[in-house]
Length: 97
Image (cartoon, rainbow, N blue to C red):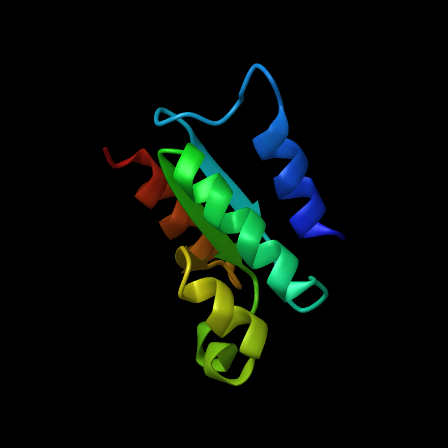
């Protein structure tokens, strides 16, 4: 998956699909992304969207050991979703204003 390119394409769409009323959800473990490109594109997506939530299926206790997670964590709100309970909690979080 080329997340950086996907985000670049999303941000470049005209008319724009990202605006302050949009919550952008990303589901990725970050392990196979081109981190510099994805980070640049994520910053632009964050600028355009109202909110960015990154759902990460890697157990949160392992996040400190994955450099790509640390990079993306510094750029957006990352939510654990390694279990069904965590996924349900993430969905509840989305329902909050």
